[in-house]
Length: 264
Image (tube, rainbow, N blue to C red; front, side):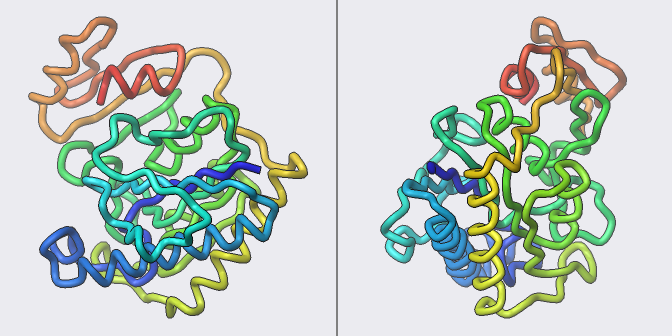
């Protein structure tokens, strides 16, 4: 069993506040990195117990230097540095994707640090008419490679979003929002156990074929609503892109990867 761990920082245990608080230079930047690394280690431990013999982790937040490599479980390999693709390194050789540190899509009520890819540039992304956040995009990208997204660990709103979209996947709510920038957080010793147990179950389910890739039928229609009309204007100049209104463009492609490459 080969497992891919997709990560982000906003949904990690204990992370709250604004982006200025936990991004480089922020007051809890190093604490947030430790918390995320701990959550990822829990997922790795659970995946190995569930039958994985190979684990690859993608550092998926910002410039992709959030995970502390020296503290990472040495049984896993880490992809870090500015990536070209949203799930760089993922291909059809993997059997399962686990998401750690997930947050809800832009505009979600009572969700910690909700946004979709950019908290300043994008208001909404729709795929075949359905609003999706990063969890949905991860599921679609994984599905393109024939791999199921089997677990989502993050804030409660992200877990609820994942379950609405994907059904019976494993979900771990490490905190619950009290507002967009504040959350009621569980202790890291509690979330470590929860994530490890959930990852173990998720990988075991995949090995038994109980979880299927998320794959839309036919072509993929992606619509992106940007914050600024100028972004829509630039995107609309590309071949095949239609402008739907002042801020929204659409593109129909053969895969979610093609659509992302054109629109984002």
